[in-house]
Every structure is written in structure tokens, then in C-alpha cells.
Length: 206
Image (cartoon, rainbow, N blue to C red; front, side):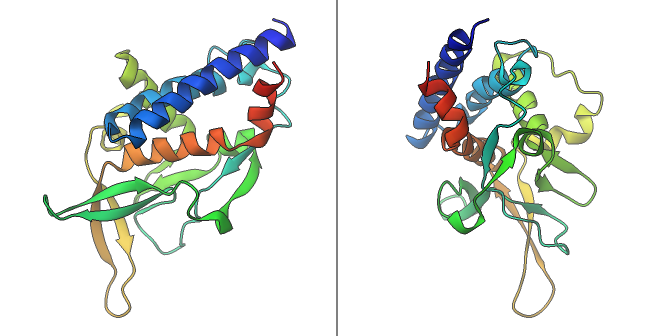
């Protein structure tokens, strides 16, 4: 595949991603699962030259990370969302950070971004972007989730609330339950990709 064809296909996937992000922002939160589909094509695909994973551009590419570093003592933590009280249902709902935490924005290499950084953790598990994106894309497409430990990680995508450790000014830490955290995290990952100049520049040169 020529460089022009590669950039054209990359541009197509970024357009699909951008549209799914718009749909999510209009209030259709379940669209977040479909945000994962172009992300999987771009960053994993089949590893061939039509995907970033199989491209010579991948090695040096830098991607935006907005993930807030985990406090060392927090048992439950996620680095890409905020939350607000849904007063009608008396639950906390997750919201993507988008560009609200620019002080934490930094560029990292593709390997660190895709399979290195932890974006969510609980007492015994660590979730990285690659797992979340591949699992969500499979769920959106209705395909088999090919993970030997899927049962162990079912809470990530089945709609269960994610636990968060909330520090208190005095007294013990508080554990809260935040709904739609998986959807908000996927939307935040979409924000990162669409605001990674090195990646969008490749598509713009098509």
C-alpha cells in the first residue's frame, strides 16, 4: 500500500471516530462503544500496512495522553474521567475530561499510549487502552470476545459502576460508585486521538 493510500485510509477512520464522538456529545452515550471500532482499526487492525500498527510511521509517532497519574495510595482510580451527581437517580455519572486538565497533557510514544499507560485500576487489576478498546470494539461489532480472563474483567464493560477512591479532608477514604465510566473513558480516548497533531497531520497529507 502506498503512503497516499495509507494516509487516505487513516483519514477515513479519523472521520468515523469524529462522528461517533459528536453523537456521544449529543447525549447518545452508548455510541462510545462504536468509538472503539475506528480506534481498533487504526491502532491494531490486522497489523498490516493499512493500519498504524503495521506502518513505518508508528515507531516515532507521539500521541496525546490526558491521563492523570494515579495517587499511589488510591485503591480504586481512573485517570480520564470526572463525575457529577445524577440527582434524579441518586447516582454518580461519569463525564470525559476532554480538555479540562491541560496541565496534565503530554505526548507519549505509541507503545506507551496503547499498551503501557494504566487508565483505570482497582485493588488487583490494571486496565490499559488496548484492552478497553479491543473489548469495546468487539462488543460493538457483536463479535466474540477472545480473552481468556474475560470473566475476571467483565465489570469493565458490562455497565457495572466503577469504584473510585475519594480522599476526605479528615477521616478514612470514601469509596464511591460511578456509572458510565467505561463510556466516558472511551470518549476521552477519542479526544486524545483527534487532538494528537502527529497523527492528524498524517491524514491531512493524503
